[in-house]
Structure formats: C-alpha cells, structure tokens
Image 1 (cartoon, rainbow, N blue to C red):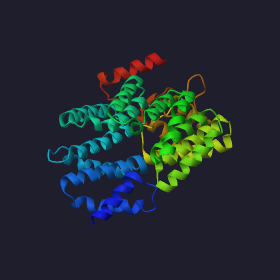
Image 2 (image 1 turned 120 degrees about the vertical axis):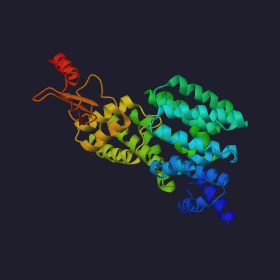
Image 3 (image 1 turned 30 degrees about the horizontal axis):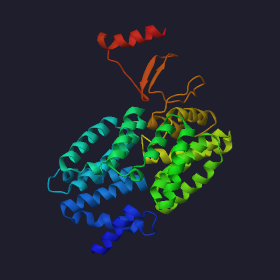
Image 4 (image 1 turned 90 degrees about the vertical axis):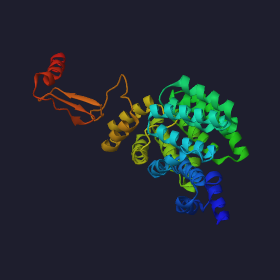
Length: 362
C-alpha cells in the first residue's frame, strides 16, 4: 500500500544504489496509471527524472514525459508537480541538443514559478539549462543560469561548482575544472550525497584523463562501481569517455582503440546529442585519431554525427570523416547531404545552382 509506495519513491529519489531499486521502479510504473492526477504527475515526474539522471534511459523516459504533458497544464495539480515535470522536459531537450526548446521551456517554467510563488524551486531548472547552454557554447548564458540557480536555491543542491567545472571542461581548461570540482567532490563525500559526488567524479575523471594524469584511474574505477550499483548508463558512459581520453593522452593506442569502440557503441545506444562538459574540439581530434588507428568506422561516423564533432584543424582528416556536405568531383560530379545524394531537377532553374557550384570548383 502507501508504505510500499513511499519506500519505492524514497529509493528513486534518495537511494538509487539500493539493491531493490529496480523492483521499486517496476512498482511505480505499475501503480502510476491508477493514481489521481496530481499524484500521477508528481510520481511520474520523479520516475522520469530517475530514468534520465540515474539510468540514462532517454528512450524509456520520453514516452512517460509525453503522456504526463496534459496533466502538467492542468490548474488543479500541485505547482511543484508541474515544476518537476518541467525538470524532466528540460533534461530531454538538453540531451536532444534542442537549444530552442530549452529556451522556450525556461521561459515557461520561470513564468509559472512567478505566477505560483515557487521561484525558490527553480534551482533544478537553472541547473539543467546551464548545462545545455554550456554544451551549446554559450558561456554567458550558462554563467547567468548558475547565478540565478544560486539565488533561487541552496548552493550545495544546485551544484555551482559542478556547473563551473562543466563550462571549463567544455572549453578545454582541465586545470580550472579540477580546481572547481575537487573541493566540492570532497564536500559531497562528507555529507553522503552519492549523486553529487558521482557527478563531480565524472568531471575529475575527464579532467585528469585529458592531461594523461593517472589520478583519473581512481575516479574511473569509482564511476564504474557506481554505475554497477545504480544500474546507471550515464556513469558508465563517462567512465568509458575518461578511459579513452586517458589512453590517448598517454599514447597507449592498443588500449585506446577498444576503449573508443566500447564508448562509441554505448554513446550511440543512449542517443544523447549533448554531454555535459564535453570538449567537442578535443573529441573531434580523438575521433580522427580513432579512424586513423583502425577503430570501427561505422560507429565512429555515427558518433561524430550524433555529437556534431568538428573535424580537427591543421591535420590530415581521415577519408571516412562524415562531412555533412560531401562534393565529389572525380568521375561523375555529385553532392551528398548527410550521406544522401542530392538530385536536381531537369529544369533550368533547378540546374543553375548545381552548374554554378561545378564552375566554381573547376
């Protein structure tokens, strides 16, 4: 009854490493359709955010979020339940790389909070938006979100150090990321905040890894242990990312290639277009190295497209690099967009742009 449900919710929210957490998830999924609207929205949003931030299961979370959307717009549900739904919606927009949707949802949730006097609960929304803006390369907007988050919630919950470290990592500043994350990582350990410590361990693993520093190994092992105990693909992915970076930084190519292949397969399986703290320029370089060193071509090309990695500068880019636009001038002239050949009509107006491009190339 109610005691079982309370225990299940407590596991999803506060103890995702509990041995019975998968049973708790199944119980929540079974009772969800039978609940009154307000409770269904709140419990459904908790489930969505558990699937997103612990399990890393975007495919499982998306239909739940969509089915709950009509409830989120109803005036008779508790405002905090609606805000929990927005947290999930923002997370999916972030993972999808849909920056316009992130901005739209932020405008809506801020207006909603102002209407209902729940601005003090906006910290989670700003926390996700800051990661989305940082991943999109908008440092100013990400920084503004961090400041708003700190004003609207408790700094330890908001994770300001985590967000600043994510910005630093995305810009290739590993030393600054280490400086931001270290003290917060230790503090999270002292207070027993498993998720926050795990998130900061992700950043420390990556920051040390790109430097070729063996201190990365401790955090990689920590992430793998946490991934196993919490059934978390997110922590597994970040462990794989750091392991590949660490091997590449130390020029251990025999270890780098299989690490890259495993990471790329998992990343494509999860389908996240945006990863917090991902230096796309550095990973574009690693993807090119992977292709040159014999990594699996198909999954590497898929990963490059998924993360929209830029080709490295001032180096030989591998022939298999999946440029969005590919123009072939040897033999028959052809144009491909995202791997699909573009055919032009037979009319003069349709042929002119193609003929002009051919003229410029020749």
